[in-house]
Length: 246
Image (tube, rainbow, N blue to C red):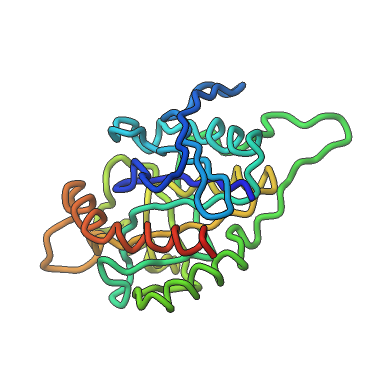
């Protein structure tokens, strides 16, 4: 199977390949954040793209999501696995825990979030989006996390904000009231675009902080986010290896 992996903050590079090859890809929507790394893991052919670039120089708002998803589609990827750092909006989702969300709230503002800028006569491309994330992939990854004794959560709602700034306290409390459990700056419109091209998509989200809703606690910083992710990145890579070798 051909599998696409999108690496987020803290996982800008993936050094797991056999016979690694770097591919420069251009699409009708422009270039990607990084060359695609192609290689074999287990029985699978894997295509890895670094969401923010190998040196993390591309802001969330400037990521060319349409190019990433289309490139993986054109390369024949049958599923997409995306990693992401996230803030926790719930006490029980502690820093270092993994979350496999099944719902999303798109609170972005300025991003290209569809391939359908216009409709052809007689075609109405209103993509069903009731269940944005692939349930079979969620079940598979949660089972692997359980086997590896990695703390994880399912049946959770992710909210994606525009960034690059973090939330205000008022926003953080509002997102909690809306029912969001975790917060990030990357999954929308990625998962929207994957659904438009009928590519099953799963997010492996790592909680790195408590956003800013907890009183009497220091607010989140980018440095703290990356430090926590990198301290626990082995859990994410171990899950990827377990899935790809299964």
